Length: 157
Image (cartoon, rainbow, N blue to C red; front, side, top):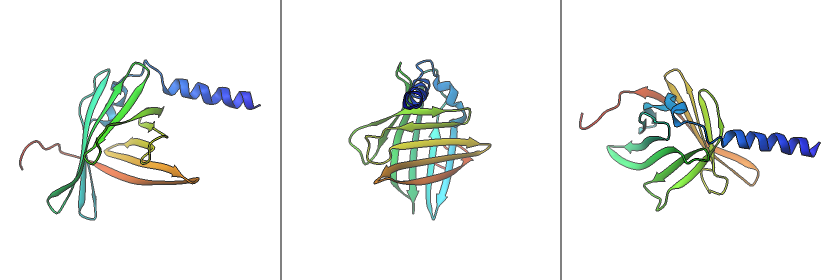
């Protein structure tokens, strides 16, 4: 019985790491998304994907000042899709491998990272749900972002 469970887990992992996965399968993430959390406005932007790359960014503004920002990209590295984050507060990029992917949902994981260990995106019409989470001492904690589609702005208003 243990071998059956292990086989199912390994098959799921192999499927999640399918090198044939195309970044274009994440085209549902493209566009500009915004959430207002008590005056802190976070805008996440995702460009048009190619087979191997989609570029994104995130910016949180409060009282007219940027309080955090992040450069993002999702690539197919030949072994599968990888979400790569570079927060403004970090010296290095952090990769998260795809763990699960569906028609309007994707989950990335890096269980060796402190926070987050998991990044989840789910699309429903003009809403984009994002969650960052980790497990620590057997307890799951996370932060949810319920984005709404917004107009992409370039340059001053």
